[in-house]
Image (tube, rainbow, N blue to C red; front, top):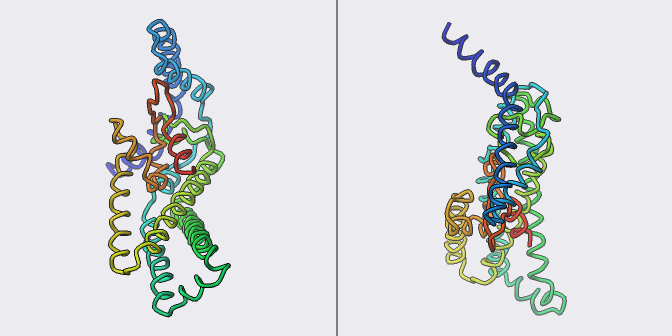
Length: 278
C-alpha cells in the first residue's frame, strides 16, 4: 500500500497539483513585481525597478496546460557525467598533438615554412575547438537516445516551466528548445576549454609541465564554476570568467540569476553567455 501511495503521489498527484496551482502562484509573483515597480520607483532604486520589470515581461501569460512525465527531461538537463569523458578526450588529444610533433621534429619542419609559421597555431586552435564541438554533439545525441529509451522523453513542446524544478526559470521556451540551448552553450564552453588547453600545450614545451598546468587550469576554473552565480560579487565574477560555467546552464536556469552592474540589473545567464562568447 505504501509503495502504491508513493508512486501515485510522486508521479501523479504532485505533478498535477503543481500544474493546477502554477498559474495562481505565478499571478501572485507578478502582482508583487508590479507593486515593487511602484515602490522602488519612488525610492529611486533603478536596480529593483529593472528587475521587477524583467519579471513582469518574462513571467506573464504563463500557464502550463500539458501534462507529461517530466523526470526524464529534468535528468537530461542535469546530466553531466559525459562532460568528464569529453575533458579526458580533449586532454588525450590536444597534448600529444604537440608532444609527438616535437619528438618527431614535425613542429620544426612546419614552422620553418612560410605558411606554417603563420597558420600553425590558428589551424591547431580551430581543429581542437572543432574536435571539442564534435565530441559534445556526439555525446549529447547519445545522452538523448539513452535517457529517451529509459524514461521516454514525451512532450517535447511542453514549456520548460512545466517542470517543477524550473518553476522560476527566466526562459520561455519548450523543453526541446532548451535542450538545444544547453547543447549550444556546452559547445561554446568546450571550444573555449580546448583553445586554452591548446595555448598551454603550445607555450609550455615540457610535456609533463604542460600536463600539470592543464590539470591546474581544469581544477581551478571548475571550482570557480561551482559557485553557480553565487551570492557575493566575487563569486559571481568567478563564475562569469570560468568556461566550465557554460556546462552548468541547465543547473543555473532553474531560477532567475541576477548581477548588479553599475547599479543596473542584468540576467546572469545573459552575462555569462555574452562574456564567454566574446
